[in-house]
Length: 415
Image 1 (cartoon, helix red, strand yellow):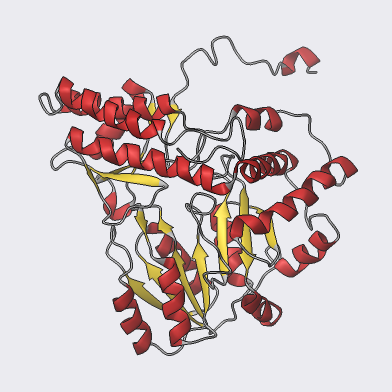
Image 2 (image 1 turned 90 degrees about the vertical axis):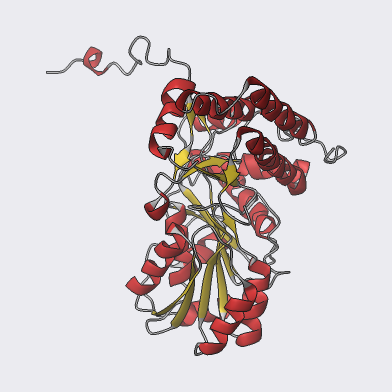
């Protein structure tokens, strides 16, 4: 029979001896030390009065993240689960659904709509490009009126940013009852997306992006127009039936069991963002993006998308260079974890994220790693002067975009 000594849960010697790699992917992202402390708290039940107080404050903060007067929700699932929830709560089989497909995640939403019986129409956008409003207008004119139009705000697989405010306006002009749903997983919290002011009918975000948490929570909200459709929607739904969640939230609790550590951490992050002002945090993310893109030309590198999102930079892999080997070299030799391309972009791009607990030294280490790995793979391609100039221009940008969540104060605006 096993004795208690057989179940030693202590980490083996040297398990954490290696220097931790710098996580600089578009998601998951590095989390702040305060979040790690919250996640390490003793487990508590999700119906205790102490936790319910935290949960109710979280529910009060969520609509402000979306810029809506409607209820907003947190669901225990990945971002893709949130995409499904956003869709199935307003969909009936046979509905005409248009999907803007400009990369891997547009493909994913199209597959979901088809799986639930939608009559699907795809508006194809070349990977790396953004929606051309005029082309979309012409395309919609040639379609029967759509019940739903879906788009990414930022197509994470390419780093391209779409003009979603214009997309909503064009869709509304074509058919006033079309619901515009946005995958804002790599955008919500990181840039201004006022849902009500822009007349958007649904948005989904993810905990593992701008909110600096582990994967596991999806944030969703629907417009008043969408709520008129939710009771009538006939797509199958059970776990994602938002009507049951709404009823539970109105009682100040969740419908299903809650991941208490993640929700406590989300409440902490949203309270901190509320304290400093969302624009301050967005200013920091924009600064990380600008610093990266200002440095790249000094290294002979280019940004892949024509209109890049502020939340990540997709770097075009130089012609003839093996992008997969480059990514592996960055991880093994420089301790930098970046992501490569997906599907047709595999080996063609490196994706560097700008969300999460990224310190100045983390980004500067990434730029130095890009320079040194390039020089190693292509001797003579990056001179010491180029390396120095890339680091200097990035450092100059970062001084104007300080990290603000550590010591929140409303009195200090972006410098």
